[in-house]
Image 1 (cartoon, rainbow, N blue to C red):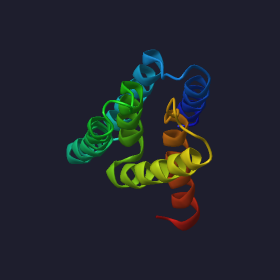
Image 2: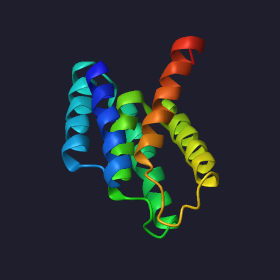
Image 3: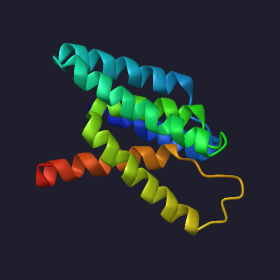
Image 4: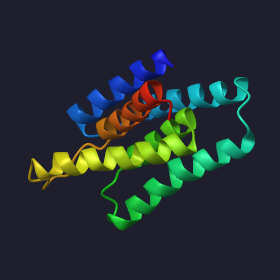
Length: 135
């Protein structure tokens, strides 16, 4: 997990700097999440629910925003959901959205915002809350 957190820190930086999430990063995260889930004995139903949350919610958001949410954000959401599970992913997506809204109020957002760092921050918040409060 620490290696993947390092990878996602790079993803957040890259998205802030270049306005996109590279495919190699989401591909590496997907490989790590898939191998970790298979080796760790995660139930197939949990994987399916995580996929529905991590892929379904961002796809609906992409459609509702008229395509302003990028494909990199959709792929990153899927990877993060596979890593943390469906319930934590749902809470993390809500946290990321709240953080992004707060960031949007601080700027004009005419060109849009990089959502990748908010996704990573939302998932880190969920993992920290779980560690501290046992959620």
